Length: 132
Image (cartoon, rainbow, N blue to C red; front, side, top):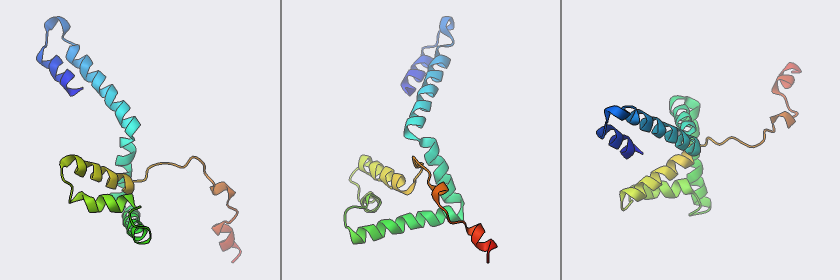
């Protein structure tokens, strides 16, 4: 992708002066597809939320603590715990990158549920406070 843009810029011709621009535009369209498929934008938003708010930071610590507790109860089943422990001892960059991705994936939860059930809850705190 980037190589094609570089090639188009290096082999510039006056008769086809828009070729580098078209190639760059095609690369941007492909990147948009990658961002959509990988949900990169959602991950970035979630990372920002978790690092700039107190509640988000609390949730990060809660996620890490739950991974630790899960490892204590059922060893070897926590992806976050395993990837974190294997991260510093990675033999090569590929393994370390994989472990980094596993940690980030486990720490960032940006998937929305298929259904919402809050309308089925009959309890209302406001109703309880108004009768007190």
